[in-house]
Image (cartoon, rainbow over all chains, first blue to last red; front, side, top):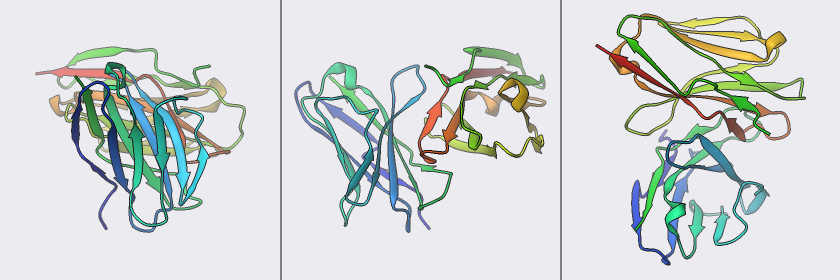
Amino acid sequence: NAGVMQNPRHLVRRRGQEARLRCSPMKGHSHVYWYRQLPEEGLKFMVYLQKENIIDESGMPKERFSAEFPKEGPSILRIQQVVRGDSAAYFCASSPQGVTEAFFGQGTRLTVV
Amino acid sequence: AQKVTQAQTEISVVEKEDVTLDCVYETRDTTYYLFWYKQPPSGELVFLIRRNSFDEQNEISGRYSWNFQKSTSSFNFTITASQVVDSAVYFCALSEADSWGKLQFGAGTQVVVTP
């Protein structure tokens, strides 16, 4: 059973471009969480999704950021018009329904140049 | 408000010394979970332990041990006889009843073990 898969592992974007980060949850997991880790900081919750639903987006910046978890396919975190301050590691975690522990992917390191 | 506080930013020890990482949390829930994760220089998050709020029994796993004290809202982590491979950032995290998978992380403690 493969773990949580994130791709790409590293992503470089120029200011103003769009970044798309993908997260394939573990098999059978219907809950996905995205976290952001800014340099030298801890992880901050961004958004919690179930299939086709956003459950909690209290940690998402109000502009340029969006997330989805479609019925089929991976969860996508999308950042439009990236700025240097978006440079960070973005982690995805997944869990089955009703389980307390979330399993983390290896992260995507976004660098905005 | 910060719900998980790791007051130690960095701890440096010489190999074979013990090191204790402090974690203090804040919650109004009676049911919650506490976690420790390790983030080595390679960047991935390695799960170390999960403890629920009803289980205050201390736990030992090899060179790792955890001391959970609800009276002081603390969940401290000790590495015994540290090794160079223990060098990493260690994060404590809290999950509350209203959203189990949503973890609130502390700022992390950098552990540097020198030979």
